[in-house]
Amino acid sequence: MLTFSALYGIISLMKNTFPKKAAAIHDLSGFGRCSLGVIIPTLSVMNVQVCPVPTAVLSTHTGGFDNIVFKDLTDFISPCCSHYKSLGIEFDAVYSGFLASAAQIYGCLDFFSGFANTLKVVDPVMGDNGKPYKTYTPELCEKMSELVEVADIITPNLTESAILLGEDYRESLTTDSVKDRLKRLCEKSKAAVITGVVIADIADGEKDFKVCNAGYERESGEFIFVEYEHIPTHYPGTGDIFASVLLGATLSGDNLRTAVKRATDFARKAVVFTHEVGGAGYQNRDGVMFESLLGQLLQDS
Image (cartoon, rainbow, N blue to C red):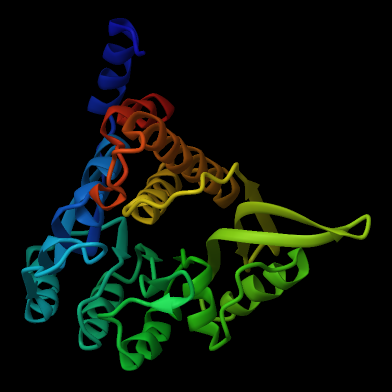
């Protein structure tokens, strides 16, 4: 727990440091702890002013709920970009995630080209567990490559990395095949981080399994593997938290390796906390309980 003096010192430091600004092009789900609902508080505590650009408004996220109220905001994105440009607003980053239609790709591209000198992060939210999400049409999945090609950093999960490369999904990969996949992803973007990678290498005649987040930076040629203990459960919002911490850490000056490590550590802490505190009666669709852990990001920033 932070002492009062430590907290005061951090606050004093932050008063003398203007927050970075990030345009966050994501959906807003009212219940379920995901997308803008976790992105805004996570980045805010890392001293980043989040300017939300909602792609859709939903009553809940789409995992485990019926009769969802869904409002598509495709017509909002490009005019929002034009308004910001007319005001002379500048961003340090543009960060895109869940898109409600293929047409929204063009709105995102307007932001990326309109604010060309920013850090461009694309979380290509398309699917999980080997399958695209129900709302993601083949056209939308195909057009996602257009965003990836202008991105500085992309953060696909294992399913999304296969979709981007037009490959069949595999539950596990070897270290060499992960490196090959990362290099091919970085023929499109400058850096890529694949989350939730199960690596199965042969050691002493037997498969050695480990779970990690794996990254590659085209310019430096550096591969990054951050291993973590797998918790056999799944909560919505963990990918949004990971990408948000990665972005916040990068904007604070961390290199990609450090940013991936910080994002991995915090996302895992949130999953472990939710798993232990929620217990058997907790419904996974309620999302990851991250709120009481945000102070740790403040302390680390």
